[in-house]
Amino acid sequence: MVKYIGTRELQSFLATRPLEQVIEGLAAYIKADYLRWQQFDKTARLASHSAVGVIELMPISDGRLYSFKYVNGHPRNTSHGLLTVTAFGVLADVGSGYPRLLSELTLTTALRTAATSVLAARHMARPDSRVMALIGNGAQSEFQAIAFHRLLGIDELRVYDVDVGATDKLCRNLRAYPDLRVVRAGSVAEAVRGADIVTTVTADKRRAVIVTADMVEAGMHLNAVGGDCPGKTELQCEVLSRSRVVVEFEPQSRIEGELQQMPADFAVTELWQVLAGEACGRVGNEDVTVFDSVGFALEDFSALRYLDEQLDARFTQQIDLVPDLADPKDLYGAAVERAPTDTLTAALNLLHA
Image 1 (tube, rainbow, N blue to C red):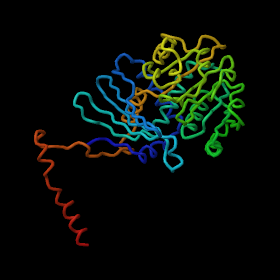
Image 2: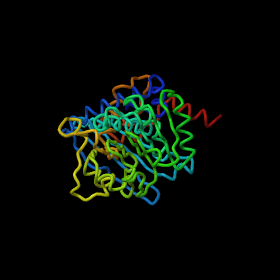
Image 3: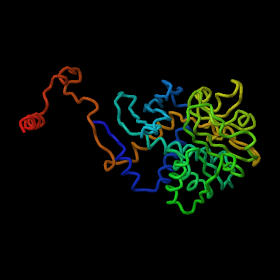
Image 4: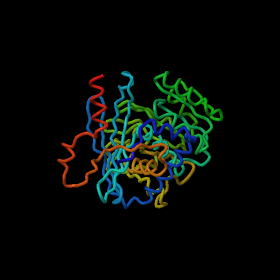
């Protein structure tokens, strides 16, 4: 039997504690795993692109546990009543190859993305940051807003999206946080002006220029989340040229992050180096810093570890994903074995009803 966490199970767990507590817990797991960076067998994610979106697999292992995430990104989905991003993942034991957890990762990805953003910002943003611009008010936006408000001290949020309905939704949901002042901006430039932190989390799969160099002020920290596949960016390349840039896994970010716009010799720092104290995320208050966040498999590995360890039997199910055989060499026997008598009887009764 394999532990299973579906959307309903995760929702039940989230109902028992504040969202920011879960995000903080995930951030602790993510930091712990980044601090043992050298133990991981790492690779850029495997992507299958189409004209309308992308489907990706994100594998990683620390030699004891193995995980992968299946995730898609289809920006047009919302026009059909579907989510832009969906995901699920598996955590397995390397020793036996057996899966130990199958879990939803759609909600969890939003939570771990916010956790990673805050984790990076603690080392890259100015400690006195209080105002954040949030560009892109879709499915990820509330998680980013709540994380930065509750865990980093942001008390004013300037919000903007080309979709007015998305901003309406964000403002409505953030009423649950009366200490956070939410200001609707009329443009990206208006939202960004005077902000300490700028978070971009737009969905369009294209080389967009959401933030231009003339909008960037000394001391800003840019949390660039939306540019996460080849051909998709949010920042003008001149923004990167004048900034201290931190990425998750450089080989992957060169392919699909904001970094894809830059020459191969453009210098960046990996997040694990900043967390380990081997490099600085920020040197002075005038620095402009960019966290080029594309999402890396280690963060999903950490999230699956968190779910496996923190959700007890109240919030999980057991499913028979793998056959349980009396003779492990007789797989054929399982294929031709008759259904248990009670199941067969119930099926016959249903047919004769």
